[in-house]
Image (cartoon, rainbow, N blue to C red; front, top):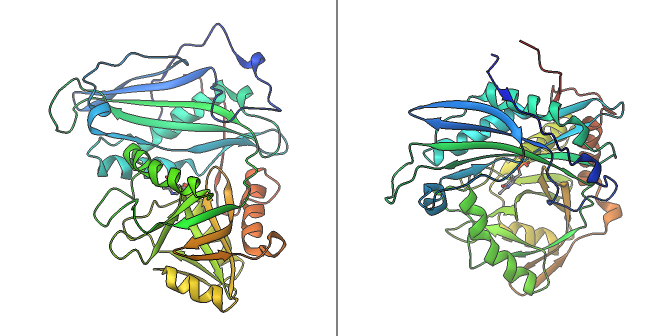
Length: 358
Ligand SMILES: *Cc1c(COP(=O)(O)O)cnc(C)c1O
């Protein structure tokens, strides 16, 4: 379906002020943004406008009660320069699963993809050409009714804005298996990309950093026994040639990178086990010399290798980078598909096309 998205272009592009060979992470925003409003039970006012501030009422419910969800995805270029998106429909679906959990309205998935197509086409010069760089896309929805009480809002704002990011050279990360704080409990909102999950994770992450570690390895909220995620990435372990990843049973964000990695591993004939993976099992594998790899998986880094895991008094140093065959293989595959060097066997790539003129 084609939606009526009104486009107002900027008269002052900031494109020339950006040094694409040296982009400060997270601080550069492209020229335009998409916005829409949910009022009286329907989405309306679809528009692409110059990127900029907007004003918020002090009683804006999203600020008080946390009805706020987001997505993170990337537009990049094939080696021949063609711009494209990676699995945008999956991000649109997850956005709506997050919305449902937070009692927020569905955003039409075809509009989500169409808005991104139009926005990114308009700002296509903002997609970096350098290999490994990308245009980061941030869809965001928040409650904006002006009301004191706690109840689901009846109005919402949807925004999609973008910004170029340089190659993400993920250095290996060290982790503390967290035995005090939790990210998500069964029945909670861990499966939703909801803003509050991230605010609550900052303190444990800061405490891990004070001890000289990069991130937290989250354990389950009930027994502090089963591994969940690493920071804001899904976690994979390679034990004795087998790939293990925690099953997403309600507390774990269903990563699209995680899904892509599992698809590739299955295709390559790896044995993968998607089930509960206890920290004791990882410790046992470590002592038996069978813990070969651990890595985080997410859109930003694709794969971030784990160099060390601290669990209580035990410090587990993982094998050197040269031996990380599984993590490196999946990273190369995904980056290869993303850059158009490898055949897109799964229909993950969606080219950004010139919108049809109506
Ligand atoms: C976004 C996110 C991920 C990774 O999801 P991708 O779709 O692969 O980017 C994993 N865990 C958490 C908590 C996240 O917020």
